[in-house]
Amino acid sequence: MKTLSSNKGLSLIELLIGLLLSSLLLLGVLQIFQSNSDAIRMQNAFSRVQESGRFAMDMLSREVRQAGYWGCVADQSKITNRLNTASSVGSEGVMGQDNVPAGTTVDGKTVAENSDILILSGAKDPCGGAGRLIAPSASGELQIQASCPVVTGAVVLVANCEDGDVFAVTELTGDEDAEVHVVKHTTDDIVGSSVKNSSAELNAIYGVEAQILSPYQKTFFISDGSLFVEDQDKRSWELVPGVEDMQITYGRDTTGSGIIDTWGAASSSDTVMAQVVGVRLELSIQSDTDAGATTDDGRLRKLYVSTVKVRNRGSM
Image (cartoon, rainbow, N blue to C red; front, side, top):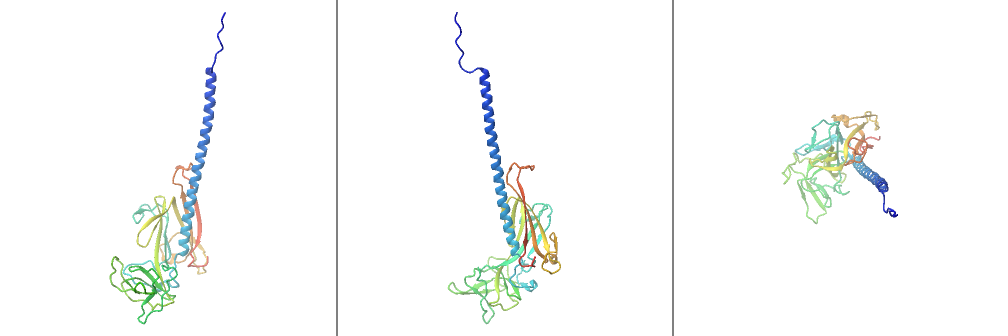
């Protein structure tokens, strides 16, 4: 009697067990891959948030510290605007708007509802340390070093420690080889500029004790999830992406001691804002994509807070 030879190969049960084990191994590999991907995504989001937060806070802090500088003129009422338009020079260096309503725009950009707007003004030396005037001529002309890059049409502030004048430069005289340029400030039209001087007079005869400065105004606001700035010429651009909200609190010295004694929101009163000696910045930073966080949209968020001294005011 013949018997069947031994079966060779895998039985159905063995094959199913093999497939099950392979599936479990593959599932484990996929879980490890997913975990690593989630960790990398969170790490990248954290890095972007940290980068945006630090950059935005450092930049705003620097601008706040420098705000309100108008040369060494202690009394801002002594600064006279000679332009045919309004100027921010001599205004309060720190202003703002609190919790702006829906529909608020800056340079055509919609500002995030209930966010704050920060407005900083001041003046900077455009000459890299060469902004001191030279002794005036017998006619009282303003003379500067030829190396100072002041150009025709520029709006400048000339000030000593007693007086100041804001005007547009109508002409610079002196050839390329001259070491001295004479700054003209007549009421003539300036080619290519709508700004002109309403008066050619000055408060003083400015000499070596005076300085020529470039006034500025910067408006910081939140739009489309980014921090923007608008300059005094109404031009705006994006500074830092990922800034969702900005809240500003102002520290005021109401007693003249130079030390903060009260904190509050921005006021429309120049008198109130003149008391500001410190600014508390709060920036809410978000990742640009879903990072797997527990929020509804999965984005990672972090709050940055810093208190900054306005160096040109008080002792804090």
